[in-house]
Image (cartoon, rainbow, N blue to C red):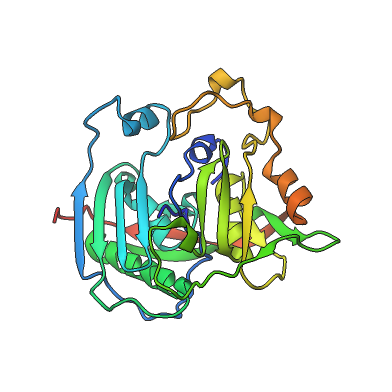
Length: 306
C-alpha cells in the first residue's frame, strides 16, 4: 500500500505527481502517541541496486523520479523496494520529505529493499486506522533500531493552503463500509486510503477523513494543506483526471511519463484540483500560513544487511 503517503510534495514535483500509486496508499495526520510503540517480529533489510537501466526503475531514475515502491498492510506487514531512509522517515512519521533535514547525504541516495512482519496476533482489533497507527509506530521503531536513527523536532512557519468549506457546505458522500473488519487486498474493503492512477486516470479516496484528504492534497500541490473544515466523520471521494501543472502543462511530448505506459495527456484540457474541489465537493483551498513540525536528523548509520 503506497503511502505518501504519508507516502507527501509539490512542484518541481511533477515527477511525484506523475507516479502516484496505482495500488492503494494511506495518508494519516502526524502520528499521535495513542498506541504503545511496538516492533516488527521479523525484519529484512538489503541494499537495492539498479541492474537494468531499461527497467521501470531505470527509466524513472533517468527522468529524475523516485523509483521507490511500498506497501503497508494493516494486518501486520510492511515492505518496500528501492526506498531511501529519508523516505522511510517520511512514511513512518507521516511528514513530507521537504520538512526533513540534517543527517548524512546517503539517507537520500542509498536505497534498500525492506520486508517486515509483525508477530501473529500483534495487531490490535477495532477500526483499521488504529492498526495503521500501530504500523507507523512499528516502522519508527524499525528505523531507530536498524539505522541508529536519532532526530529532534522543530516547529517552523510555512506557507500552506487552508482546506475550508464553501458557503453551501461540503458535497461529499458519507462512507458506510465496515472499517473494523480485517483488510484484504480487495480495493472494495480499503479504508483510510486512496486508489487509482493519479492525474492521468483519476484517484478515489475510501472511508477517509478530511485530515487524510488534506494529506493527499499536500502530496499533489506546491505547499502543505491544513484541514480547517471542522468536518467530522469519514467519506468517499473520487477525482477524475486532473491537470497537475499549476502553471500550465508543457507540450505533451515534454511531459514527464507516469509509472504506467500510455500516450501523452493534454493536461491543459483538464481541471485542476482547486477547480474540482470547488465545483464538485463544495471545498476550497485558500493560501495561508501555519506553524508545522519539521524533523532534523542528528545521527544515522548504514544498517548491517540481514
